[in-house]
Image 1: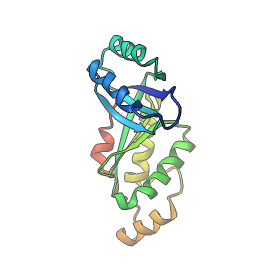
Image 2: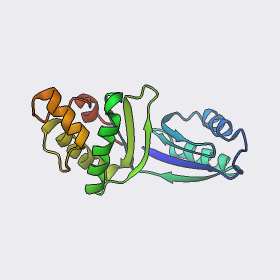
Image 3: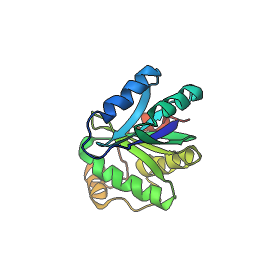
Image 4: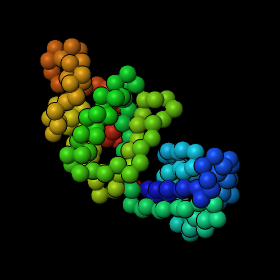
Length: 177
């Protein structure tokens, strides 16, 4: 996927920035996949099937109101988790990513609160999936489990290391570039 980081050149508190940005996406018929935003900036992903020339026109049209950084060769990895265990899952994920030197370029949590998407470099995707699968499904995690997670696992599985708070099929079918 392609990531666009779009930051307003207007001062904080100026209204209409996000509306302007998304009008341009509509005008250029570009569909956004993953989104993270604040009042003065938005980061988003565009599927690699979208025309690069059209993306370049979008960037040109937004340059009068925003600074834009384009990052190619990125991938989306999405975890599905029990919302009540998302903090524990994230603690493990970030420790794995840190140990494996996998940089998260962007992240977003869906409105349903059960899916968490990470944008990583495409050359890191396979390692990220393998390491997280080992932690959440094989019981062979390269980092120590989050203490609360470990206690919950023992309570629910009589001491085995089965973790059921991530959907394996979704993880194995993580979006690739």
